[in-house]
Every structure is written in structure tokens, then in C-alpha cells.
Amino acid sequence: MAQTGLSNRIRAVVVGGSTGSIDVLLRLLPALKPPLSFTLIIVVHRRNTADSALADLLSVKTNIPVKEVDDKDVIEPGMIYLAPADYHLLIEQDGTFSLDDSEKVNYSRPSIDVTFESAADVYGRTLVGVILSGANADGTAGLNVIKKGGGVLVAQKPETAQIGFMPQQAILHADIDLILDVYELIEFVNGLNT
Image 1 (spheres, rainbow, N blue to C red):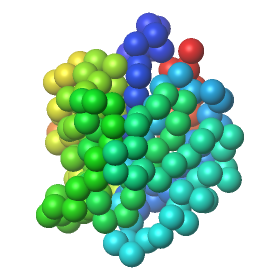
Image 2: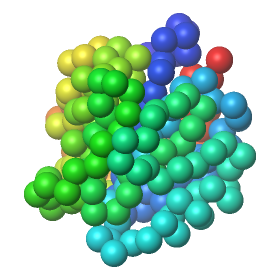
Image 3: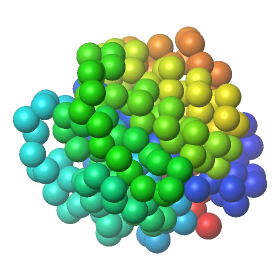
């Protein structure tokens, strides 16, 4: 898929991952060139009791502002937002986030599917969905909703993932546009920046 023209229309990139995805994020974030012209939203499976250490860790790796989302935060371009532990993260039509503590989806809260689906409703064809390393199929249903809305789908090359099951499930069950290793993913995301 040619990237030409994508950078002019992309307003948000949503990234989902589980086991092994932190390593990818720790390579991706330092390589991104600020300021971002879009919003980057990250959903990572982690323990229910996790504190904000992950947001702090990601913050020191990039010059782009990183924030763990609070309920009703206004979504701003140029920011990196991280879903908090033990809440589903939803994107609202009024340009804010909301947090939800309803039942787990795919044994997960936050669920990648929940965030991807709500982002697709708001951003439509101006959205990129990225699925990284992980051990379950969370994210595949959400990617299909993003695709239905005209968005672009990216999966980490399973053979480059610590756990390739999650991107492999996405590749098998969604119409993935790009299958990339970490270096190619960095280049792709930087290419979206205008």
C-alpha cells in the first residue's frame, strides 16, 4: 500500500499489544520525530494493579508528551496517550476519552478491541490501527471495524514479535494493509507526520 496521501488525512494512530509489545514501544517512541501531527493512542495489556510506572517509563524515552488517560481528558494532536490499567479506554464523539470498568473483553481490561472500535467510530478513514506482539486475539475484531470505516491496518511481522500469535490472528482474520518489522513500523509512523 502506498503511503502517499496518508499523511494528509491521518488524525490518529491506535496501537494495541500485549506480551512483548513494551519492547516494541521502547524502540518506536524514541524514534518518532516530534511534533506529531496526529494523536497516538496506546492500549497495552497489563496487570490490574499496575501503577503509572509504564507511562513514566515511556515518557523518559521520547520528547513527545506522554499521558496516562484520565476520564474526560480532551484528546489533543501531538500527544501520546496510554490506556490506564484495569479500565477500557473509549474515544468519544466530543473529542474526549472515557474510562469504563465493565466486564473484561478477551480476558482483558483494557481491551484493544474496545478502544479500536470506538476510535473507528470517531476517526473513520483518518485512523490507523496497529497490532503488536501478544498471546491472544484481542484487537482483531477492532481492526475489522477500523477497516470497515476506511482506516488503515498494520500488523507487526509475527516472526519479529516476542509472541507472534496476536499479529498472526489479525493477519488471518482482518484485511491487513501492511505487515511490518519494528524498523519499518518506525519509518511508517514517521511518514504519517506532516
